Image 1 (cartoon, rainbow, N blue to C red):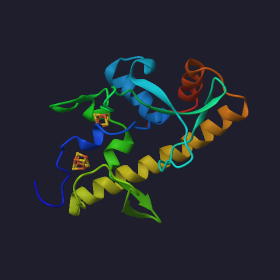
Image 2: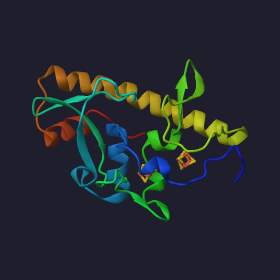
Image 3: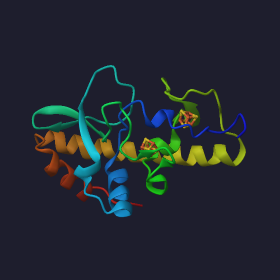
Length: 170
Ligand code: SF4
Ligand code: SF4
């Protein structure tokens, strides 16, 4: 493990709710056979949040869709051997702790990552590709969310159905 690599320590999987897009949800359903409600939960939207994902109107309140986590904030897919859904993990996880800013790979504003590192070479290319896909899917999620919110929202189950019908896995 060099200074340009993720340590795979799992620290970022055990600290906060991981936002997902409908595209992530569809991929996880396809690869695990789980129902969305089995691995998703909702948290209240809050003004100071730094993530890019939209809030959606569920039962009259603005909510953020995240992966389920336990009382200590550990992601439901985390195990001591690593991510249980590594092949279909959300794009936020794939790109973390980076985002695309002004067309370039940049660090997220606040990082749970314990290590100061930056990918290079092939690693950098992969992170850039994943961060671009993350940005693209988040943008498409905004359109879905705005459409849903403008119709007055509804319950979580109906939102999931609406979001999955209006997105397609690439
Ligand atoms: S889905 Fe996997 S990579 Fe993402 S936070 Fe959960 S355990 Fe970590
Ligand atoms: S991104 Fe940082 S905190 Fe997350 S697994 Fe890699 S080194 Fe650990």
